Image 1 (cartoon, rainbow, N blue to C red):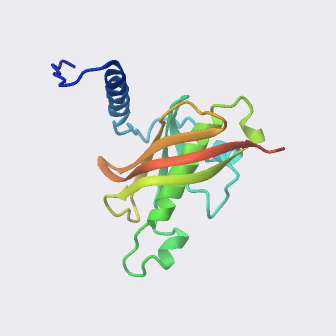
Image 2: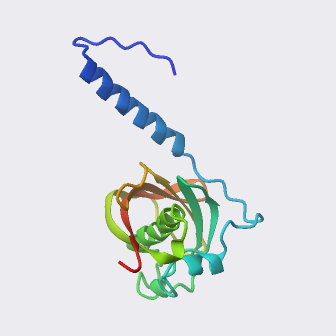
Length: 188
């Protein structure tokens, strides 16, 4: 990155604030790439490991597998089939995956990311606290494979995690936004 910036009123505080904004923008642009999905490769977590990690069960377990996981990002897959229970009423003759369930699938994948940061994830719950700036770009239809990526925006502090999420069908961005979650020990 090369730039020449001329400031009319330069000062230390303004320079520090600008440098922080620039650093944040660069970090976010590094994470914006679509996750690479190869269905022939083995998953990092299959449906059994996902079910052992999260408390959700059918019909509300909305993740089929995790294809990438590290301390700062995760990618998972939801195969959307015509047999999904929600297509019965949303909408008859014109099935579309509800946006709230896309957000829930993203939150569950984000929960896997947050639980990956503790040494004993089976002893913790993750609770969804909030969403910001969610946008739905395209409809998700039966037969689509939803590839969802979540990235931590900052280190987890006091049990609160803030992350971005993006969902793709093929190379098309279908949904994106920011989520906040809390991680709580089960015995508290």
